[in-house]
Structures are given as structure tokens and as C-alpha cells.
Length: 218
Ligand SMILES: C[S@@+](CC[C@H](N)C(=O)[O-])C[C@H]1O[C@@H](n2cnc3c(N)ncnc32)[C@H](O)[C@@H]1O
Image (cartoon, rainbow, N blue to C red; front, side):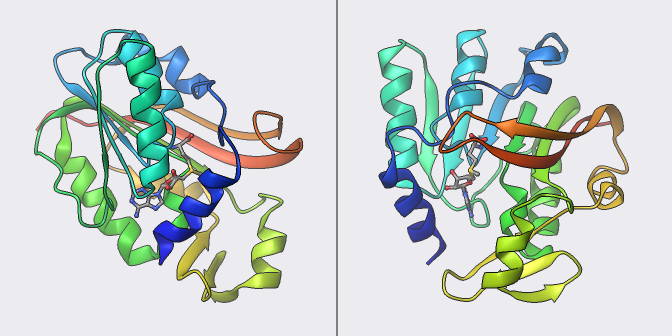
């Protein structure tokens, strides 16, 4: 059911999220080792993946939306880049162990139940190499769109709303919760932001938490 929601979103416009990579990723690119690959989970049309491929990284990505994947592949071909992008559900996706220097979860983790979030994090952390980085960007509990979730969905836990019609969750993170996801890692950067988003649709405000963390050596 869930992929249909995203399909509908992608089919409604030519480019959903713009082409600008997340600024924290731009700022810390030099920290990402080329000895491992980059994995973009919920790659969308590839705004972050295309950037890392341009910088000479070996990039893989997955997304539940076939439309998003085919757009990402088209863009990758247009710019003569090599991104291995596949239509898949992260909950069923096999992540290779100790494979990645960077794993990107940009605006993805909000849409899962707590159980799925925990399982996804466990799987991704195994996929990182020692000293590998994980980047997570989520809506926080002051995000303005929480109002819509409250109106349309059933509250099932603190800051968690279940959209029955589309069989998907909307979870808004507290800062403590975000830090707990990577409590065993070293924080490189943690930023809470409020900003006007004019990259897609009508300009609108967001409230987000972004973290870049490093996996420790065993
Ligand atoms: C808000 S968009 C963000 C896209 C992209 N990461 C970016 O920042 O531009 C969320 C993305 O997660 C994908 N997604 C949602 N559920 C997924 C799942 N179970 N497995 C893989 N991708 C999923 C959606 O199709 C969508 O492309």
C-alpha cells in the first residue's frame, strides 16, 4: 500500500525534492572515505546520490517508488554517472555487512513504526564499515505539518500518528530520540533547524533534526 502513496507524489510533478544536496553532507564530504561505497536509503530522484557520484564515490541506492528510481537512473545516465539504484523496500532489503563508508537516510525515517525504525537502524549500522558515517535527517516534534497528521491520522504514541488509509506512520522525533538512534557512535554534527523550504511546491516551513555520526572501531 505504502509505495502507492509515494508513487502518487512522484507522478504529480516532474521533480519532487529539487537537486540541492543536504548541506551537512556537502560540508563533511571530505570525511567520507572512498574505500567504501555510499548507500542512499529512500534515494528519491537522487539529489544526494548524484552529488556523491559526481565526487567519484561508488554509489548505491534504493527506493520503494519505481518512478523515483527510474528518474534517478535517467539523471545518472544524462550526467554520465554510475549509480546502482534499485526499486525495493528497505524493510526487506539485504544490506551487505561492512560495505559502506556513508549511509544516507534523508527524510525517510519519519514514515515508519518504532519497530521498523529500530530494525532498519540495526541493519544499516551493520552495513557500515568501521569509521563509516551515517547521516540522518528527520522532521522533529516542532515540525508544522504535525498539525495535518493530528487532523488526519490516529495518534498511536507520543508524536506518532498512523495514517490508516495509506497504511503508513508519521513520527516526529525529539532530540533525545534522535541521539539515541546513534548513541554508540561519535557525533560529528547535530543541527536543529527551522527554515523556509522553497525547493519544491509552495514555500513552506520545516523544523528538522540532522545528525552525522561515526561508527566506532571495534
Ligand atoms: C521525503 S522523500 C525523501 C527523498 C530523498 N531521500 C531526499 O531527501 O530527497 C522519502 C523517500 O522515502 C522513500 N521510501 C518510503 N518508504 C520506503 C521504504 N519502505 N523503502 C524504501 N524507500 C522508501 C519514498 O519513496 C521517498 O522517495
